[in-house]
Image (cartoon, rainbow, N blue to C red):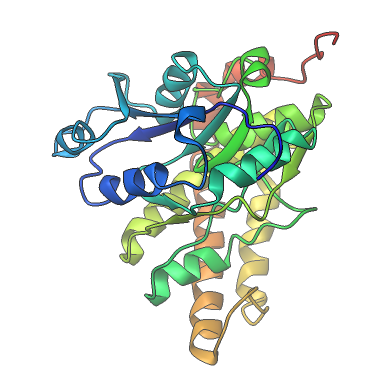
Length: 296
C-alpha cells in the first residue's frame, strides 16, 4: 500500500439490485484498505424490490434519489461524501480486494482521474464473456466507465460532476477532463467484476442505448456525422472474421465475433434512428465543453 493513505468515498447507485447488491457490499467491506479511511455510500434510485432492506443490514450509508437517473444518483452521493477521493462502481459489481489500494496508489502518483477496466467478469457463460471481449481497454485506448472510475473530489466539483442530460455521462466527463488538461490515466490494477445479464436481448437493448450515448459524445467532440454510421454498418458486415481480443478458444472466437459485429451494427442503427431525438434532448451539451483549470 502507498505511504499516504487518503480518505476514499465509495459511491454506488442502485436500482432493483436485490440479486447482486449483497455481493457488492461484501466486496467493499472486505477491502485491503483501512476501514477508518473509507466510507461506502449507496444511493437508491427508486428500487421496488428488496434492495433497500438488504443495504440497511450493513454498516454502509444509504441515500435516496427519486429522480431516476444513475448520474444524478452518483452526483448526490458525491456531494454528500467526506472523502478526498471519490470511487464509483455499480451495485452489480464486485470489487477486487485491492481495488481501493490500487486507486490510492495512482492518486499518490499525481494522477487526478484513475479509470479501471469496466468489462471484467467472473461469469463463465459465453454471452457475458463475449460482451467483455468487445470492450478491452488499454493505456492508450480507454474511456470513461462509471462502474470503475475514481477521481479527486476537488476535480469532480470543479467540472460540475457527471453530466446528467442523457446516457454516456461517464464517457463525457473523462473526455472533458482529458481535453482540459487533467491527469487522466488508465489503471489496470483497479479491478471490479461485473455480473452481466446472460440474456442476449437484454444486452442488445443496452447496446441500443449506447448508440444514443454515442450521439451525445460526438456532439461534445464536434464530430457529428450521421453518414459515417451507415458506412460503419456496412464495414461490420464485411469484417466478420476480425479477431476479437482475448478470445480463448474457437467457440469463443466465433461467438465473440458474431456478438461484436451484431452489437456494433445495433449501435450504428440506434445512432441513425435516434439522431434527431437525442440532438434535441442534448442541445445544452455544447455548454459542456473544455474548462479552464483553476490556478493552483
